[in-house]
Amino acid sequence: MAVILSVQGVDKTYRSAGRSLAVLQQINFEVETASTIAIVGPSGSGKTTLLGLCAGLDRVSAGDIVLNGISLDALGEDERARVRNQHVGFVFQNFQLLPTLTALENVMVPLELRGERNCKATAQELLDKVGLADRGHHYPLQLSGGEQQRVSIARAFSNSPKILFADEPTGNLDADTSETVENLLFSLNRDMGTTLVLVTHDLELASKTQRIIRMKGGTVVSDTMENNVL
Image (tube, rainbow, N blue to C red; front, side, top):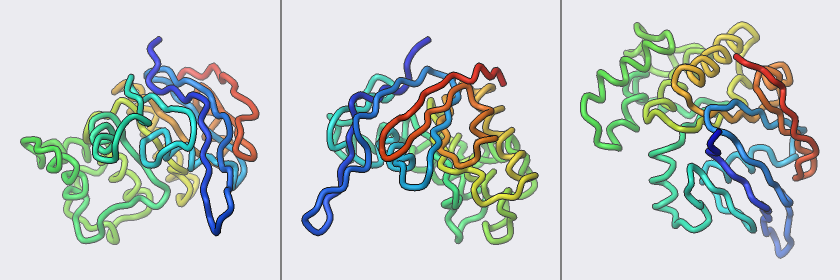
């Protein structure tokens, strides 16, 4: 199986008030195309920092991250933005929708930024896929938390990403809504062949992935295959 993401000897250190804080130390792993993986660990273990580095949102202090064959460390900010635009989707805990735009318009934004044609029809099709065909004209504040998260998933899939990074995607949702969102993420992974990388505190959600990486104190303490076929 091809490798979509390779993390090689990655360190991340922040400097503050003349002191260095090592957040990640010597992280090494590879992720296969179309697989599902969860990164778990206590608060402060470096999970979200690692996710941001893997997605090219921030730079490593040492090591390298290779995303779809592209070394992110070798790229400038504009080039990394292009890589994200072409290959990456994001789902965040707090949805990150633009409040002044409707659900349909939120999904259309990345399509318009890429200069694609038929943006409205494509965005509507994506909303259909996440079960919100009749909610496109609603603004985020008119939608429930679960509906907002489904809009953000539709937006994340607007560029048919090769890899989707989800940071606590069910963290602000109740149990029933969480299950709906989880099923949606895994079905889109299956139907579109998109690699799914989750950061989560929810061990039940993590157990539904094929592989779990456990972190503590900025290092990987275990990396286990779950043998799940969803």
